Length: 207
Image (tube, rainbow, N blue to C red; front, side, top):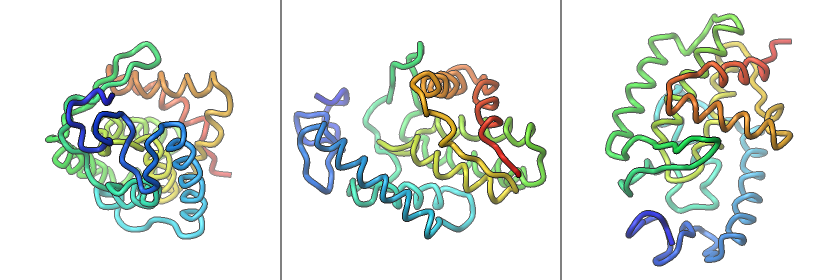
């Protein structure tokens, strides 16, 4: 059962997200999603998302990744209650859905005021990108797929600022993945982005 009563994103009486393949078993949906997302990332390499770094671009990134999986791709999260995850030693709670549009507007206004992080050296860029990653993660704009959307959105932002960010270097082992989860959750729940900045710095390359 979905942890949210009357969750509009799930098939009634289940915790399986409504999907274009009409899969009602989670394992089947997971495979369908993984295959579609793999192809979507490949397609975005050939035809990147463009436009200003704002809410619309974040939504378009989500649509490109999940449009063939979920009919609600790119739709900002509806009010289904407080979204939480128990992971890496934290009970992570994300902001309420009602605040998502305003919170996104505020985050991107700050990013624009910082000239989209253009001209920063690697160390400072990593610290500021960690801040904005944690801001967008805490907002959790979508019902599902926020992490993968940020994994596509942040390298685009880095490239526009003159850096190359390759998340593929992280998560190659279970320990690396857990370290990333912990860093993200620490940033969201305690506002401590130091570990996330270290991971981002290790994945930056300007050679």
